[in-house]
Length: 227
Figure 1: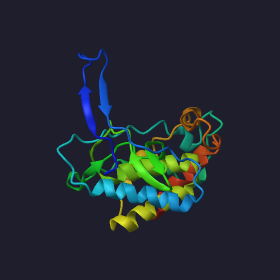
Figure 2: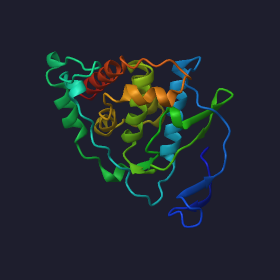
Figure 3: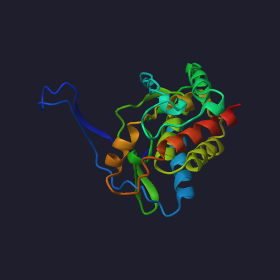
Figure 4: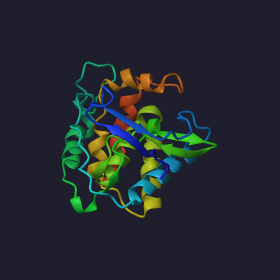
């Protein structure tokens, strides 16, 4: 796997003064303006399938994040990204109910825990490394899939998020549990338009006001697909 190798660790900071991890350096750069978005998304899916195919070691379960305040989805939030979804027959309720369905522990795979384009390095048009592994653990494969799809919807489009799901399932030969997938999709919140531009750091255009619309569309399409 193109992941950093551990050189040394000082978890409590007793030797270095601060909790410290030292890993090998891997070449590459984050790519946020791909010339071919469709093939770029497929490459991201292919790499995640590779990660999930690694026999998981004895790791703790990945943390399941609490769903964000879903008023942005229900349409009664004062933030300008709020949406009127009254006509959708309780979109937030339906999404919550499905996301709350427990995962089967027997289906747990090696999970990065924060797999998305900010943690993937590219070189020569191919992925050269996957970095930032402090959230690694065991989880349903849908957790990583949903987290990546959320970030794709936020920065690009609902189409990109759906492409990733379709590509992942086609490459892995497995259907993703929509419950685990939605568990991460529901972590979007009205503060995302504030911090995503900081992560992007000028490397790509950011449409903050449109983020909620794109995530909402992704959730709606995911629910239709699951139903």
